[in-house]
Length: 442
Image (cartoon, rainbow, N blue to C red; front, side, top):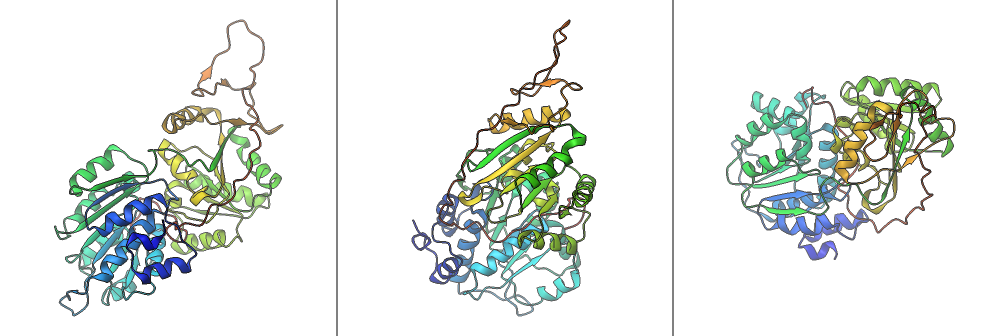
């Protein structure tokens, strides 16, 4: 199947083709006709499957096909589509996709989020904006100041709705929903299904088409996953060793905290490895600078927190490292979804110390998969000073009373894997991006 068979306009097909994309992904093949039909949609897909294009392409087609556009009181065309995202960088990524796929259409789009001047956004809102991409907090800032009109919204898109709920945006979302026309199309996209998503969909969607192109809470087959048992105070040493030994040139590293991210960047810099951090305490300009350097290959290591990296989309990103395991198992799926996208191969490495064994067990239970251990000579966990771990559950096994034998490592070398050839390029929804802390206004 090609994009031309999905009912999209020639102008959109031309823009998609110019970007080198010819074959729609599974989520696009199902979602695009559903959105074009005008009904509500509940869609779940793993990250990296082309989710953004699955709603931007049909949205552009629908809006450009309608010639009967009303004017607002100031004589401008009204905002007709609202796309909400959980983070700043994801908003920027989505709006960029809208502009690139709609380059041959007469529609106008705008992105707005916190951390930048609101006065410039106010000025832009006074001119024509057909499609508004924004974060909930900054949108409500404009609502409070009376600078945005949502009374003519025809289509609402909640992108990465699961993350918005995890970040505590449910009250903001409900307030925004109360400002929209009752007659509209609602599109709700999620990466991991939860009871929260189920409840939100029940109150928002009307007889929706339901699409789920992959099993819930699973990892991509194109990602090779490895676990290294390591003492906590030797993690940085092991990371440096892996980067140097295999000459990794583009590595996304996850830490649990902002402080941990900054500390790791300092340590890697001391090891003469170029690294920068992105998290909620960084200014928008610093985050944009770090992301730009990482995308163009001039930055070797980008250290990020979970929220800051949400929505990050880098073509053929080869390595993701969990320096700290996440507290929420589903975040592991989001993290390693940064690599192995659109059929490309990738590797996800987790550095696990003794107090993270239960987190690892929870992750394995979620993804229904055992993660293999691998060791580096001289850099394994100090089994003389910590309990032995057992792979099935990674719980601590006490030594039998009276036994004087030292605990034996259960780590087994991972067989060498071959790199799979890249599949034909498919639309993955635009450029790359990430997010910010939920504690600050968007």
